[in-house]
Length: 593
Image 1 (cartoon, helix red, strand yellow):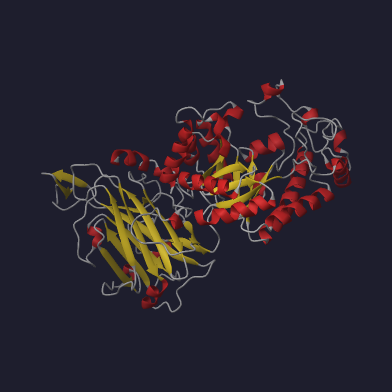
Image 2 (spheres, helix red, strand yellow):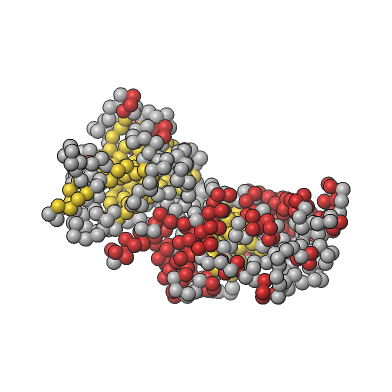
Protein backbone atom coordinates (compact mmCIF):
# COMPACT_ATOMS: atom_id res chain seq x y z
CA UNK A 1 0.00 0.00 0.00
CA UNK A 2 2.78 2.42 0.93
CA UNK A 3 4.55 1.79 -2.36
CA UNK A 4 1.32 2.53 -4.20
CA UNK A 5 0.81 5.76 -2.27
CA UNK A 6 4.42 6.73 -2.89
CA UNK A 7 3.97 6.30 -6.64
CA UNK A 8 0.91 8.51 -6.50
CA UNK A 9 2.61 11.10 -4.35
CA UNK A 10 5.53 11.33 -6.77
CA UNK A 11 3.08 12.88 -9.21
CA UNK A 12 1.76 15.50 -6.83
CA UNK A 13 3.84 18.24 -8.36
CA UNK A 14 1.43 18.04 -11.28
CA UNK A 15 -1.55 18.99 -9.15
CA UNK A 16 -1.07 22.60 -8.15
CA UNK A 17 -3.39 25.58 -8.11
CA UNK A 18 -0.81 28.02 -9.42
CA UNK A 19 1.87 27.46 -12.01
CA UNK A 20 5.04 29.51 -11.90
CA UNK A 21 7.89 29.67 -14.42
CA UNK A 22 10.93 28.08 -12.85
CA UNK A 23 13.10 31.04 -13.72
CA UNK A 24 10.85 33.66 -12.13
CA UNK A 25 12.09 34.58 -8.66
CA UNK A 26 9.86 37.51 -7.82
CA UNK A 27 8.03 36.97 -4.53
CA UNK A 28 5.17 34.56 -5.11
CA UNK A 29 1.56 35.29 -4.16
CA UNK A 30 -0.91 32.89 -2.58
CA UNK A 31 -4.61 33.59 -1.98
CA UNK A 32 -5.67 32.45 1.48
CA UNK A 33 -9.40 31.68 1.47
CA UNK A 34 -11.77 31.90 4.41
CA UNK A 35 -13.30 28.68 5.75
CA UNK A 36 -16.75 28.53 7.28
CA UNK A 37 -15.90 26.24 10.21
CA UNK A 38 -12.80 25.58 12.32
CA UNK A 39 -10.36 22.98 11.00
CA UNK A 40 -9.57 20.06 13.26
CA UNK A 41 -5.80 20.02 13.77
CA UNK A 42 -4.72 16.37 13.76
CA UNK A 43 -2.31 16.15 10.83
CA UNK A 44 -4.97 14.51 8.63
CA UNK A 45 -5.57 16.77 5.65
CA UNK A 46 -8.81 15.06 4.63
CA UNK A 47 -10.87 17.56 6.66
CA UNK A 48 -13.67 18.76 4.32
CA UNK A 49 -12.66 22.37 4.94
CA UNK A 50 -9.38 21.75 3.10
CA UNK A 51 -11.03 20.21 0.02
CA UNK A 52 -11.24 23.26 -2.22
CA UNK A 53 -8.29 25.12 -0.70
CA UNK A 54 -5.59 25.22 -3.40
CA UNK A 55 -2.09 23.85 -2.95
CA UNK A 56 0.90 26.07 -3.52
CA UNK A 57 3.39 25.43 -6.26
CA UNK A 58 5.99 22.80 -5.30
CA UNK A 59 8.81 24.23 -3.19
CA UNK A 60 12.03 25.17 -4.97
CA UNK A 61 15.67 25.56 -4.00
CA UNK A 62 16.10 28.52 -1.66
CA UNK A 63 18.41 30.28 -4.14
CA UNK A 64 15.91 29.98 -6.99
CA UNK A 65 17.20 30.88 -10.43
CA UNK A 66 18.55 27.96 -12.41
CA UNK A 67 18.99 25.70 -9.39
CA UNK A 68 17.58 22.22 -10.06
CA UNK A 69 14.16 21.35 -8.72
CA UNK A 70 14.22 19.42 -5.44
CA UNK A 71 13.92 15.65 -5.87
CA UNK A 72 11.11 15.45 -3.30
CA UNK A 73 7.79 17.30 -3.52
CA UNK A 74 6.83 19.79 -0.82
CA UNK A 75 3.70 21.94 -0.94
CA UNK A 76 1.51 23.93 1.44
CA UNK A 77 -1.96 25.41 1.66
CA UNK A 78 -3.51 28.01 3.95
CA UNK A 79 -6.94 29.07 5.19
CA UNK A 80 -8.37 31.47 7.77
CA UNK A 81 -11.42 32.32 9.82
CA UNK A 82 -12.29 34.91 12.45
CA UNK A 83 -10.18 33.20 15.08
CA UNK A 84 -7.14 31.63 13.44
CA UNK A 85 -4.72 31.13 10.58
CA UNK A 86 -4.53 27.52 9.36
CA UNK A 87 -1.56 25.96 7.58
CA UNK A 88 -1.20 22.52 6.02
CA UNK A 89 1.85 20.99 4.40
CA UNK A 90 2.69 17.75 2.64
CA UNK A 91 6.32 16.63 2.43
CA UNK A 92 7.26 13.67 0.27
CA UNK A 93 9.83 11.61 2.16
CA UNK A 94 11.11 8.04 1.62
CA UNK A 95 13.18 8.15 4.84
CA UNK A 96 11.33 9.54 7.86
CA UNK A 97 14.02 10.62 10.31
CA UNK A 98 14.00 12.66 13.51
CA UNK A 99 15.92 12.84 16.77
CA UNK A 100 14.97 16.07 18.57
CA UNK A 101 12.25 15.77 21.21
CA UNK A 102 12.69 18.84 23.42
CA UNK A 103 10.66 21.94 22.66
CA UNK A 104 12.53 25.05 21.49
CA UNK A 105 15.69 23.19 20.57
CA UNK A 106 17.10 24.09 17.15
CA UNK A 107 14.72 21.86 15.18
CA UNK A 108 16.43 22.52 11.85
CA UNK A 109 19.19 20.14 12.91
CA UNK A 110 16.57 17.54 11.98
CA UNK A 111 14.63 17.51 8.73
CA UNK A 112 11.83 19.98 9.43
CA UNK A 113 9.06 22.25 8.15
CA UNK A 114 9.32 25.98 8.90
CA UNK A 115 6.96 28.97 8.77
CA UNK A 116 8.01 32.66 8.73
CA UNK A 117 5.41 35.40 9.22
CA UNK A 118 5.65 39.20 9.07
CA UNK A 119 2.05 40.49 9.46
CA UNK A 120 2.62 44.12 8.44
CA UNK A 121 5.48 43.50 6.00
CA UNK A 122 7.83 46.02 7.57
CA UNK A 123 10.64 43.41 8.02
CA UNK A 124 10.47 43.99 11.78
CA UNK A 125 8.78 42.06 14.58
CA UNK A 126 8.35 38.77 12.78
CA UNK A 127 7.82 35.16 13.80
CA UNK A 128 9.21 31.72 13.06
CA UNK A 129 7.82 28.27 13.74
CA UNK A 130 9.52 24.90 13.14
CA UNK A 131 8.37 21.30 13.55
CA UNK A 132 9.95 17.91 12.83
CA UNK A 133 8.49 14.47 12.09
CA UNK A 134 8.29 13.75 15.83
CA UNK A 135 6.02 16.78 16.29
CA UNK A 136 8.66 18.66 18.28
CA UNK A 137 8.08 22.41 18.02
CA UNK A 138 10.20 25.52 18.13
CA UNK A 139 8.91 29.08 17.90
CA UNK A 140 10.71 32.37 18.21
CA UNK A 141 10.30 36.10 17.77
CA UNK A 142 12.74 38.52 16.10
CA UNK A 143 12.48 42.28 16.46
CA UNK A 144 14.74 42.60 13.42
CA UNK A 145 16.68 40.23 11.12
CA UNK A 146 20.00 38.69 12.06
CA UNK A 147 21.83 40.76 9.44
CA UNK A 148 20.70 43.84 11.38
CA UNK A 149 21.96 42.36 14.67
CA UNK A 150 18.59 40.92 15.63
CA UNK A 151 18.57 38.45 18.49
CA UNK A 152 16.06 35.57 18.55
CA UNK A 153 13.75 35.28 21.51
CA UNK A 154 13.35 31.57 22.09
CA UNK A 155 11.53 32.30 25.35
CA UNK A 156 8.67 33.74 23.31
CA UNK A 157 5.73 31.45 22.44
CA UNK A 158 2.81 31.48 20.02
CA UNK A 159 0.15 31.36 22.74
CA UNK A 160 -2.60 28.97 21.75
CA UNK A 161 -0.79 27.54 18.71
CA UNK A 162 -1.67 23.93 17.92
CA UNK A 163 0.21 21.67 15.53
CA UNK A 164 0.09 18.00 14.55
CA UNK A 165 1.99 15.74 12.19
CA UNK A 166 0.91 12.53 10.52
CA UNK A 167 3.46 10.01 9.28
CA UNK A 168 2.93 7.84 6.24
CA UNK A 169 5.62 5.31 7.03
CA UNK A 170 7.85 4.33 9.94
CA UNK A 171 10.05 6.93 11.58
CA UNK A 172 13.74 6.05 12.01
CA UNK A 173 13.27 2.66 10.32
CA UNK A 174 15.54 2.20 7.27
CA UNK A 175 13.99 -1.22 6.71
CA UNK A 176 11.09 0.20 4.69
CA UNK A 177 10.41 2.94 2.18
CA UNK A 178 8.21 5.69 3.57
CA UNK A 179 5.84 7.93 1.64
CA UNK A 180 5.48 11.35 3.23
CA UNK A 181 4.56 13.30 6.31
CA UNK A 182 1.91 15.97 6.70
CA UNK A 183 1.70 18.95 9.02
CA UNK A 184 -1.29 20.91 10.26
CA UNK A 185 -0.95 24.15 12.21
CA UNK A 186 -3.46 26.55 13.76
CA UNK A 187 -2.23 29.96 14.97
CA UNK A 188 -4.82 32.14 16.74
CA UNK A 189 -4.75 35.76 15.65
CA UNK A 190 -4.36 36.71 19.31
CA UNK A 191 -0.98 34.93 19.35
CA UNK A 192 0.50 37.72 17.22
CA UNK A 193 -0.31 40.33 19.86
CA UNK A 194 2.67 39.09 21.84
CA UNK A 195 4.93 40.45 19.12
CA UNK A 196 3.56 43.95 19.30
CA UNK A 197 0.80 43.65 16.69
CA UNK A 198 -2.16 45.24 18.47
CA UNK A 199 -4.95 44.20 16.10
CA UNK A 200 -3.42 41.43 14.02
CA UNK A 201 -6.51 39.80 12.51
CA UNK A 202 -6.53 40.61 8.78
CA UNK A 203 -9.41 41.85 6.68
CA UNK A 204 -10.30 40.48 3.28
CA UNK A 205 -7.93 42.09 0.79
CA UNK A 206 -5.04 42.43 3.26
CA UNK A 207 -1.66 40.89 2.41
CA UNK A 208 0.98 39.54 4.80
CA UNK A 209 4.59 38.64 4.05
CA UNK A 210 5.02 34.90 4.68
CA UNK A 211 7.39 32.19 3.57
CA UNK A 212 7.86 28.49 4.18
CA UNK A 213 10.99 26.38 4.26
CA UNK A 214 11.84 22.71 4.37
CA UNK A 215 15.21 21.57 5.71
CA UNK A 216 16.42 18.22 4.35
CA UNK A 217 19.61 16.40 5.35
CA UNK A 218 21.51 13.84 3.30
CA UNK A 219 21.43 10.48 5.09
CA UNK A 220 23.33 7.21 5.07
CA UNK A 221 22.20 3.92 6.54
CA UNK A 222 24.83 2.48 8.87
CA UNK A 223 24.16 -0.73 10.78
CA UNK A 224 20.44 -0.29 10.34
CA UNK A 225 20.45 3.31 11.60
CA UNK A 226 20.04 6.64 9.76
CA UNK A 227 23.05 8.90 10.07
CA UNK A 228 23.78 12.24 8.43
CA UNK A 229 26.29 12.09 5.61
CA UNK A 230 29.64 13.53 6.64
CA UNK A 231 32.15 15.61 4.77
CA UNK A 232 35.21 13.28 4.65
CA UNK A 233 37.57 16.25 5.02
CA UNK A 234 35.94 17.89 8.04
CA UNK A 235 34.06 15.01 9.58
CA UNK A 236 31.05 17.29 9.94
CA UNK A 237 27.61 16.72 8.36
CA UNK A 238 27.22 17.89 4.78
CA UNK A 239 25.24 21.14 4.45
CA UNK A 240 21.50 20.75 4.59
CA UNK A 241 19.20 21.32 1.61
CA UNK A 242 16.81 24.27 1.90
CA UNK A 243 13.64 24.15 -0.17
CA UNK A 244 11.19 27.03 0.01
CA UNK A 245 7.86 28.22 -1.32
CA UNK A 246 9.08 31.62 -2.57
CA UNK A 247 12.82 31.61 -3.42
CA UNK A 248 14.99 33.91 -1.31
CA UNK A 249 17.80 34.33 -3.86
CA UNK A 250 20.40 33.46 -1.22
CA UNK A 251 20.73 30.79 1.47
CA UNK A 252 19.13 32.91 4.16
CA UNK A 253 15.49 32.77 5.25
CA UNK A 254 15.87 35.85 7.40
CA UNK A 255 15.46 38.39 4.63
CA UNK A 256 11.75 39.18 5.12
CA UNK A 257 11.59 41.50 2.12
CA UNK A 258 12.11 38.42 -0.07
CA UNK A 259 9.21 36.46 1.39
CA UNK A 260 6.04 35.83 -0.57
CA UNK A 261 2.71 37.62 -0.29
CA UNK A 262 -0.32 35.91 1.22
CA UNK A 263 -3.56 37.69 0.33
CA UNK A 264 -6.60 37.04 2.51
CA UNK A 265 -9.92 36.60 0.72
CA UNK A 266 -13.54 36.19 1.79
CA UNK A 267 -14.39 34.63 -1.57
CA UNK A 268 -15.17 30.95 -1.95
CA UNK A 269 -12.25 28.98 -3.38
CA UNK A 270 -13.03 27.37 -6.69
CA UNK A 271 -13.27 23.57 -6.79
CA UNK A 272 -10.50 21.55 -8.39
CA UNK A 273 -12.71 18.91 -10.00
CA UNK A 274 -15.90 19.71 -11.92
CA UNK A 275 -18.51 17.95 -13.99
CA UNK A 276 -21.00 19.17 -16.59
CA UNK A 277 -24.51 17.89 -15.85
CA UNK A 278 -27.96 18.23 -17.36
CA UNK A 279 -30.77 18.87 -14.92
CA UNK A 280 -32.95 15.97 -15.97
CA UNK A 281 -35.93 15.18 -13.80
CA UNK A 282 -34.82 13.75 -10.48
CA UNK A 283 -36.43 13.70 -7.07
CA UNK A 284 -34.69 15.36 -4.16
CA UNK A 285 -33.71 11.89 -2.93
CA UNK A 286 -32.18 11.07 -6.32
CA UNK A 287 -30.27 14.35 -6.35
CA UNK A 288 -28.99 13.67 -2.84
CA UNK A 289 -27.69 10.32 -4.11
CA UNK A 290 -25.96 12.02 -7.05
CA UNK A 291 -24.35 14.57 -4.75
CA UNK A 292 -23.15 11.84 -2.42
CA UNK A 293 -21.65 10.08 -5.43
CA UNK A 294 -19.83 13.24 -6.52
CA UNK A 295 -18.57 13.80 -3.00
CA UNK A 296 -17.17 10.26 -2.93
CA UNK A 297 -15.38 10.91 -6.23
CA UNK A 298 -13.85 14.16 -4.96
CA UNK A 299 -15.82 16.30 -7.43
CA UNK A 300 -16.97 19.48 -5.73
CA UNK A 301 -18.09 21.65 -8.65
CA UNK A 302 -21.22 21.12 -10.78
CA UNK A 303 -21.90 22.99 -14.02
CA UNK A 304 -25.63 22.37 -14.08
CA UNK A 305 -28.11 23.06 -16.89
CA UNK A 306 -31.53 23.22 -15.26
CA UNK A 307 -34.54 25.40 -14.52
CA UNK A 308 -34.56 27.75 -11.56
CA UNK A 309 -36.52 25.43 -9.29
CA UNK A 310 -34.11 22.55 -9.87
CA UNK A 311 -31.11 24.82 -9.45
CA UNK A 312 -32.40 26.09 -6.12
CA UNK A 313 -33.13 22.56 -4.88
CA UNK A 314 -29.74 21.18 -5.91
CA UNK A 315 -27.91 24.18 -4.45
CA UNK A 316 -29.65 23.61 -1.13
CA UNK A 317 -28.90 19.88 -1.13
CA UNK A 318 -25.26 20.39 -2.14
CA UNK A 319 -24.35 22.70 0.74
CA UNK A 320 -23.70 19.93 3.33
CA UNK A 321 -21.31 18.28 0.87
CA UNK A 322 -19.37 21.48 0.21
CA UNK A 323 -20.26 21.16 -3.48
CA UNK A 324 -20.63 24.33 -5.54
CA UNK A 325 -23.40 24.68 -8.12
CA UNK A 326 -22.78 26.90 -11.15
CA UNK A 327 -25.54 27.47 -13.69
CA UNK A 328 -24.59 26.13 -17.13
CA UNK A 329 -26.18 28.40 -19.76
CA UNK A 330 -26.22 28.13 -23.54
CA UNK A 331 -25.71 31.79 -24.33
CA UNK A 332 -25.55 32.83 -28.00
CA UNK A 333 -26.90 29.50 -29.29
CA UNK A 334 -30.47 29.23 -28.01
CA UNK A 335 -33.89 28.57 -29.45
CA UNK A 336 -35.93 30.98 -27.34
CA UNK A 337 -35.04 34.24 -29.05
CA UNK A 338 -36.86 36.17 -31.75
CA UNK A 339 -36.16 34.51 -35.14
CA UNK A 340 -35.15 37.92 -36.54
CA UNK A 341 -32.20 37.91 -34.15
CA UNK A 342 -30.66 34.76 -35.64
CA UNK A 343 -27.36 35.28 -37.38
CA UNK A 344 -26.58 35.42 -41.12
CA UNK A 345 -23.69 33.96 -43.07
CA UNK A 346 -21.61 35.57 -45.80
CA UNK A 347 -24.09 34.36 -48.43
CA UNK A 348 -26.87 36.34 -46.75
CA UNK A 349 -28.58 33.23 -45.38
CA UNK A 350 -30.27 33.36 -41.97
CA UNK A 351 -30.19 30.52 -39.47
CA UNK A 352 -33.95 30.99 -39.33
CA UNK A 353 -34.12 29.31 -42.75
CA UNK A 354 -30.72 27.74 -43.49
CA UNK A 355 -29.21 25.02 -41.29
CA UNK A 356 -25.54 25.29 -40.31
CA UNK A 357 -24.24 21.78 -39.59
CA UNK A 358 -27.05 20.84 -37.18
CA UNK A 359 -30.62 21.90 -36.64
CA UNK A 360 -30.09 23.10 -33.08
CA UNK A 361 -27.59 25.78 -34.13
CA UNK A 362 -29.66 28.89 -33.44
CA UNK A 363 -27.00 31.51 -32.84
CA UNK A 364 -28.08 35.04 -32.05
CA UNK A 365 -26.08 37.96 -33.37
CA UNK A 366 -24.35 39.82 -30.52
CA UNK A 367 -24.49 43.25 -32.17
CA UNK A 368 -28.28 43.52 -31.90
CA UNK A 369 -29.29 45.71 -28.92
CA UNK A 370 -32.40 43.64 -28.27
CA UNK A 371 -30.26 40.49 -28.08
CA UNK A 372 -28.11 42.05 -25.40
CA UNK A 373 -31.15 43.15 -23.43
CA UNK A 374 -32.67 39.69 -23.78
CA UNK A 375 -29.53 37.92 -22.59
CA UNK A 376 -28.97 40.31 -19.69
CA UNK A 377 -32.53 39.69 -18.53
CA UNK A 378 -32.01 35.92 -18.63
CA UNK A 379 -28.71 36.07 -16.76
CA UNK A 380 -30.03 38.57 -14.24
CA UNK A 381 -32.76 36.12 -13.25
CA UNK A 382 -30.36 33.18 -13.03
CA UNK A 383 -27.87 35.13 -10.94
CA UNK A 384 -30.55 35.62 -8.30
CA UNK A 385 -31.28 31.92 -7.81
CA UNK A 386 -30.69 31.28 -4.12
CA UNK A 387 -27.66 29.21 -3.24
CA UNK A 388 -25.82 29.10 -6.55
CA UNK A 389 -22.14 30.00 -6.61
CA UNK A 390 -21.72 31.11 -10.20
CA UNK A 391 -22.89 31.29 -13.80
CA UNK A 392 -21.17 29.32 -16.56
CA UNK A 393 -21.59 30.47 -20.18
CA UNK A 394 -21.49 27.98 -23.04
CA UNK A 395 -21.83 28.57 -26.80
CA UNK A 396 -20.61 32.11 -26.19
CA UNK A 397 -19.34 32.44 -29.75
CA UNK A 398 -20.36 32.46 -33.43
CA UNK A 399 -21.10 29.45 -35.64
CA UNK A 400 -17.96 27.39 -36.37
CA UNK A 401 -16.32 28.88 -39.42
CA UNK A 402 -13.98 25.88 -39.25
CA UNK A 403 -15.01 22.64 -37.58
CA UNK A 404 -12.49 20.57 -35.61
CA UNK A 405 -10.79 18.26 -38.10
CA UNK A 406 -12.10 15.13 -36.41
CA UNK A 407 -15.71 16.26 -36.88
CA UNK A 408 -15.50 17.35 -40.51
CA UNK A 409 -15.97 13.85 -42.01
CA UNK A 410 -19.22 13.49 -40.07
CA UNK A 411 -20.65 16.27 -42.24
CA UNK A 412 -18.88 15.25 -45.45
CA UNK A 413 -16.60 18.29 -45.27
CA UNK A 414 -12.96 19.10 -45.80
CA UNK A 415 -12.53 22.62 -44.51
CA UNK A 416 -9.04 23.49 -45.67
CA UNK A 417 -10.11 27.14 -45.81
CA UNK A 418 -13.03 29.33 -44.77
CA UNK A 419 -16.22 28.77 -46.77
CA UNK A 420 -18.79 31.57 -47.00
CA UNK A 421 -21.75 29.41 -45.98
CA UNK A 422 -20.09 28.83 -42.58
CA UNK A 423 -18.77 32.36 -42.05
CA UNK A 424 -21.30 34.06 -39.76
CA UNK A 425 -21.70 37.49 -38.22
CA UNK A 426 -23.26 39.06 -41.34
CA UNK A 427 -26.59 39.96 -39.76
CA UNK A 428 -27.98 43.18 -41.29
CA UNK A 429 -27.65 44.99 -37.94
CA UNK A 430 -23.99 43.98 -37.67
CA UNK A 431 -23.31 45.00 -41.26
CA UNK A 432 -24.92 48.39 -40.75
CA UNK A 433 -22.92 49.05 -37.57
CA UNK A 434 -19.71 48.20 -39.41
CA UNK A 435 -20.65 50.37 -42.39
CA UNK A 436 -21.38 53.34 -40.14
CA UNK A 437 -17.93 53.03 -38.60
CA UNK A 438 -15.80 52.10 -41.62
CA UNK A 439 -17.81 53.27 -44.63
CA UNK A 440 -18.16 49.87 -46.30
CA UNK A 441 -20.62 47.02 -46.05
CA UNK A 442 -18.59 43.96 -44.97
CA UNK A 443 -20.43 41.88 -47.55
CA UNK A 444 -18.60 43.97 -50.16
CA UNK A 445 -15.11 43.41 -48.72
CA UNK A 446 -13.17 41.50 -51.41
CA UNK A 447 -11.68 38.96 -49.00
CA UNK A 448 -13.55 39.23 -45.69
CA UNK A 449 -11.97 35.99 -44.44
CA UNK A 450 -8.59 37.76 -44.23
CA UNK A 451 -9.74 41.28 -43.41
CA UNK A 452 -8.41 41.83 -39.89
CA UNK A 453 -10.58 44.91 -39.27
CA UNK A 454 -13.79 43.01 -40.01
CA UNK A 455 -12.66 40.01 -38.01
CA UNK A 456 -11.73 42.25 -35.07
CA UNK A 457 -15.06 44.07 -35.28
CA UNK A 458 -17.00 40.83 -34.84
CA UNK A 459 -14.79 39.75 -31.96
CA UNK A 460 -15.32 43.09 -30.22
CA UNK A 461 -19.11 42.98 -30.64
CA UNK A 462 -19.18 39.64 -28.87
CA UNK A 463 -16.71 40.92 -26.26
CA UNK A 464 -19.05 43.81 -25.46
CA UNK A 465 -21.96 41.41 -24.97
CA UNK A 466 -19.83 39.24 -22.69
CA UNK A 467 -18.84 42.33 -20.71
CA UNK A 468 -22.46 43.27 -20.05
CA UNK A 469 -23.30 39.78 -18.82
CA UNK A 470 -20.12 39.58 -16.76
CA UNK A 471 -20.75 42.84 -14.95
CA UNK A 472 -24.32 42.09 -13.96
CA UNK A 473 -23.43 38.60 -12.73
CA UNK A 474 -20.54 39.92 -10.66
CA UNK A 475 -22.82 42.60 -9.20
CA UNK A 476 -24.78 39.73 -7.64
CA UNK A 477 -21.67 38.55 -5.81
CA UNK A 478 -21.20 35.27 -7.68
CA UNK A 479 -18.55 34.14 -10.14
CA UNK A 480 -18.78 33.91 -13.90
CA UNK A 481 -16.97 31.50 -16.21
CA UNK A 482 -17.20 30.14 -19.74
CA UNK A 483 -16.72 26.96 -21.73
CA UNK A 484 -14.40 27.91 -24.57
CA UNK A 485 -12.47 26.40 -27.47
CA UNK A 486 -9.05 24.89 -26.66
CA UNK A 487 -6.81 27.97 -26.93
CA UNK A 488 -7.42 31.69 -27.54
CA UNK A 489 -5.80 31.48 -30.98
CA UNK A 490 -7.86 28.46 -32.02
CA UNK A 491 -10.99 30.14 -30.69
CA UNK A 492 -10.47 33.29 -32.72
CA UNK A 493 -9.78 31.34 -35.90
CA UNK A 494 -12.47 28.70 -35.56
CA UNK A 495 -15.47 30.37 -33.85
CA UNK A 496 -14.61 34.11 -33.56
CA UNK A 497 -14.19 33.80 -29.80
CA UNK A 498 -11.78 36.17 -28.03
CA UNK A 499 -11.92 34.61 -24.57
CA UNK A 500 -8.55 35.71 -23.21
CA UNK A 501 -9.90 39.28 -23.25
CA UNK A 502 -13.12 38.62 -21.32
CA UNK A 503 -11.85 39.15 -17.75
CA UNK A 504 -13.92 36.34 -16.27
CA UNK A 505 -13.25 34.60 -12.97
CA UNK A 506 -12.13 31.39 -14.67
CA UNK A 507 -12.30 29.47 -17.95
CA UNK A 508 -13.07 25.92 -19.04
CA UNK A 509 -11.36 25.22 -22.40
CA UNK A 510 -12.86 22.11 -23.99
CA UNK A 511 -9.65 20.25 -24.75
CA UNK A 512 -11.34 17.35 -26.53
CA UNK A 513 -8.32 15.75 -28.15
CA UNK A 514 -10.28 13.33 -30.34
CA UNK A 515 -12.13 16.23 -31.99
CA UNK A 516 -8.77 17.36 -33.35
CA UNK A 517 -7.34 13.91 -34.11
CA UNK A 518 -4.71 14.33 -31.40
CA UNK A 519 -3.31 12.10 -28.66
CA UNK A 520 -3.70 12.89 -24.97
CA UNK A 521 -0.18 14.36 -24.98
CA UNK A 522 -1.62 17.29 -26.95
CA UNK A 523 -3.60 18.28 -23.86
CA UNK A 524 -0.40 19.37 -22.12
CA UNK A 525 0.61 21.59 -25.05
CA UNK A 526 -2.80 23.25 -25.07
CA UNK A 527 -2.81 23.98 -21.36
CA UNK A 528 0.71 25.41 -21.50
CA UNK A 529 -0.48 27.89 -24.13
CA UNK A 530 -3.51 28.81 -22.05
CA UNK A 531 -1.54 29.41 -18.86
CA UNK A 532 0.95 31.50 -20.82
CA UNK A 533 -1.92 33.62 -22.12
CA UNK A 534 -3.59 33.98 -18.70
CA UNK A 535 -1.04 33.03 -16.03
CA UNK A 536 -2.99 34.51 -13.13
CA UNK A 537 -6.47 33.22 -13.97
CA UNK A 538 -7.78 29.77 -12.99
CA UNK A 539 -8.17 27.55 -16.04
CA UNK A 540 -9.89 24.18 -15.76
CA UNK A 541 -9.18 21.67 -18.51
CA UNK A 542 -12.34 20.22 -20.03
CA UNK A 543 -12.04 16.52 -20.92
CA UNK A 544 -14.42 14.50 -23.10
CA UNK A 545 -15.16 11.25 -21.27
CA UNK A 546 -16.57 9.25 -24.24
CA UNK A 547 -13.08 9.44 -25.82
CA UNK A 548 -11.32 8.34 -22.63
CA UNK A 549 -13.00 5.02 -21.89
CA UNK A 550 -10.03 2.79 -22.71
CA UNK A 551 -7.63 1.62 -19.99
CA UNK A 552 -6.13 4.47 -18.00
CA UNK A 553 -6.63 7.07 -20.74
CA UNK A 554 -8.45 9.40 -18.36
CA UNK A 555 -5.60 9.30 -15.84
CA UNK A 556 -3.14 10.07 -18.64
CA UNK A 557 -5.30 12.95 -19.87
CA UNK A 558 -5.58 14.45 -16.39
CA UNK A 559 -1.85 14.05 -15.88
CA UNK A 560 -1.18 15.84 -19.19
CA UNK A 561 -3.53 18.66 -18.20
CA UNK A 562 -1.85 19.21 -14.85
CA UNK A 563 1.61 18.99 -16.41
CA UNK A 564 0.51 21.80 -18.70
CA UNK A 565 -0.50 23.94 -15.72
CA UNK A 566 -4.24 23.30 -15.44
CA UNK A 567 -5.76 24.53 -12.20
CA UNK A 568 -8.25 21.69 -12.27
CA UNK A 569 -10.31 19.34 -14.40
CA UNK A 570 -13.87 19.46 -15.72
CA UNK A 571 -15.48 16.32 -17.08
CA UNK A 572 -18.06 16.02 -19.84
CA UNK A 573 -20.24 14.60 -18.62
CA UNK A 574 -21.73 12.92 -15.57
CA UNK A 575 -23.73 10.44 -17.67
CA UNK A 576 -20.52 9.05 -19.22
CA UNK A 577 -18.98 7.90 -15.94
CA UNK A 578 -18.08 4.20 -15.86
CA UNK A 579 -16.70 2.24 -12.92
CA UNK A 580 -13.20 2.46 -14.39
CA UNK A 581 -13.45 6.23 -14.90
CA UNK A 582 -14.79 6.67 -11.38
CA UNK A 583 -11.76 4.91 -9.95
CA UNK A 584 -9.36 7.05 -11.98
CA UNK A 585 -11.15 10.26 -10.95
CA UNK A 586 -11.17 9.29 -7.30
CA UNK A 587 -7.48 8.47 -7.40
CA UNK A 588 -6.59 11.78 -9.05
CA UNK A 589 -8.81 13.77 -6.71
CA UNK A 590 -7.14 12.16 -3.68
CA UNK A 591 -3.70 13.15 -5.00
CA UNK A 592 -4.84 16.66 -5.83
CA UNK A 593 -6.49 17.34 -2.46
